[in-house]
Structures are given as structure tokens and as C-alpha cells.
Length: 195
Image 1 (tube, rainbow, N blue to C red):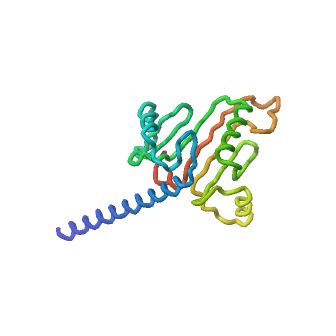
Image 2: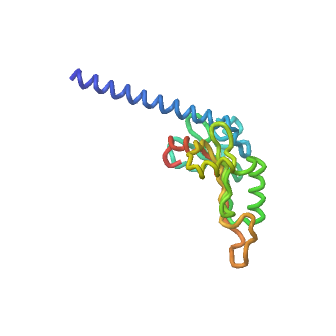
Image 3: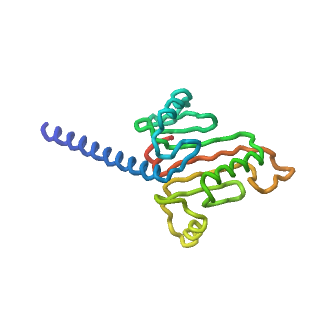
């Protein structure tokens, strides 16, 4: 009987130590991402929401997919945050039936926020990638790809459009399309299921 009790206590201690280590890893990641200052409409990826943002969150909740998170809308901006720390996990906006001009305006606005992108692809995808220290340039990205070197990407801004961003829309193609951008850190999201 005493052996069983000792075994149970050991299992609980190991579980608690594992949970503490995981929490420390997550907090460290949040701190690293927050230092990058990836900001959109006043929300900073990895940073805790301020009092005004918490009021907006309380007034405009959206159902979250994970019990560890909460989600809300601030005008067009959707934000997902961790319940225990109120730290921002995801920032995104989505637009239905956007014209090519509206898409170009949004991309231009993102360029103003985040500077030149890391990747442009098929005139429908724009991608900014960040390491622990800074944004990865397109030259650094291309060099790493050519050398088959893995980049330690900590956070990203992904912009995806249904229709061409710059190339003139042809007569047979749709005049409007769905477009969205999402700001997140896959490293952090691994700690959350179904976020």
C-alpha cells in the first residue's frame, strides 16, 4: 500500500514539474514574440491586452475553439488571446467580396506596417516571417531555401487573396474575392489545441 502511495506521489510530482516546465517554455516564447513588436490596430502579438482592449473583448466576444483561449472582435479585427495571461495569440482580418483595389490598399497598408515582405507568391500570397531577432528578408529566405537551411521562424504575417493582387484581373476572372491576413506564432500555437 505504501509503495502505491509513493508511486502516485511521484507521478503527481513529475506531472507538476512537467507542467511548470511547459508553462515556463510558453512564457519564454510569449516574451520573445512580444519583443518583435508585431502590431496591428494596437494589438501586439504575444503581449497582454491592456484595460481598454479587455473592455472591448468583454463587449464583443466570439466563441473560441479552445477552452484555454478567448476570442473577440474589435471592428474588423479578430483577436484570440490566452485566458490565463490575456496575451495575444492571433490577430486576423477577413474580407468577403473585396475588389482588387481594396486588396491592393490592404496589402499597401500591411507593407507600411511590416516593410518589405519575406515572400511574394503567385500574386495572391504575401508572407512576412520573423526569427527571434528580426524579420527575415527575401534574400535571406531565398538563400536559406537554396542552401536547404532551416530557418527558425518564430512568428509570421500571412496575407492570402482569392484574386490577383497586382496583375490586372481578366474578363473571365472574378472581379471580387475573399482576402485575409493572419498574424501568429506557430511555436506558441503548438501549446494550444484547436485555437
